[in-house]
Length: 397
Image 1 (tube, rainbow, N blue to C red):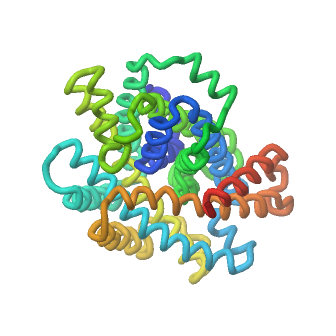
Image 2: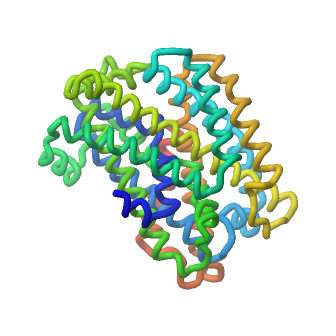
């Protein structure tokens, strides 16, 4: 495991950021209601998100510019205005939802303080981690957190002695039980992040991966990331398959999974699982706090200042101001309702970005003038069209 973690780079950050409360809740509810029959949705979600993220990385390594720069430079201005409006809305809701998720996880783990207090504490810690440390330190923290949550969740799924034959049968012969469409779509949409996919471009830049010679390494890096993400999602479904659907709501989502693990390993196991859940949501918080401000700072410097040469976005005023404001102002959302409501909205609003990303990758990455030999293959285009249609449906219905 240690050798594996050393060999990969930003992909592990993508996996740690993408695995959060939204997809854990979607997989838990789907697994509780439909068991192994919904596992195929995790795999499809992982494949579709890999295609999107690979397109982002391939564009950057071939053109040596970010996808944000590509939108501004090569697409009609309406795309840029749509994206910045969406980014501000998404950030406000998602930063608030992640505060709620970390608050719920810490409250379930400790039993002390309120969800709101824990949310504020975690946001403050994330701000310090992002501003005080380098990318290398950030990546190391994310690796530690992903090891924690994978050890807990995957080991617990093995302890359940899952029917491996039944799992493979449902993968090979996917089905949609009555009433399961919305849960399958939620799982597909929740796997592997949404807007944070764009952060991968900034993370590979921090890793000094520049130029098309890094394309093979980038593809391996992302393949490992989404394999890990898919295994994690399958493990959550296996754990939740035996839960009664009526307990899977509100804070019962966290407690129900922890109790299931506790039945097998005793009280100590229950606390270990809660600790793993906390690691999953806190890693998402740190990844979003660190990665999303890059997108905003890059957009502002490119669109308004036409500064496409800024290689140190993390030290810009735009990066710091955006991160601090979004790490504090959305706290008001916790005061307006139950935290779980925010987490559900988090999953829904994220899916609205996917059709936009898929469409722009079909447009830009099929340009022979821009991408030359690295333009999309027929297979990539097919998967991008599936992404476009599927997430348009999810966003509308």
